Length: 157
Image (cartoon, rainbow, N blue to C red):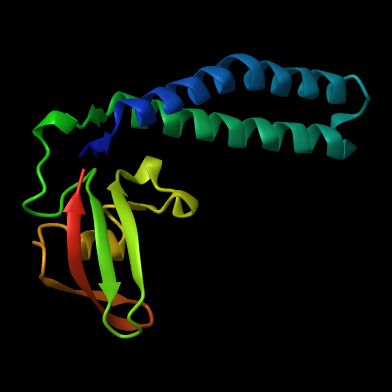
């Protein structure tokens, strides 16, 4: 089963740029590192060669993952979004009922999640708990540290 990755047009463009950089610049650099290490002698005892091969393997794994994400990406049409219920691409102002703290989060696809920018993946525990809720509703979210209740204060685009 193919997993669909929902994201913004901007997020998809960033992934495509990263994929292009990895397949052109980084892949070539990895091949050069392997060739340089190979030139240093006996491959059976060449730690530099082993490290270069391992780095290449990790790079190819990242490239494959990005190719899959880009191939299965679906750009969210922001003109079709509304603020009646919490959905992907919404800004949501929430209050933690336990400690009273208020924060604004933006629900995004997994590949665009970034805590520093307050972008939460819709697949995260908080994201899943907020989806489908209306302004004024309480979302009970199961986290590793127990149930946390958030009140939905505002939903915006």
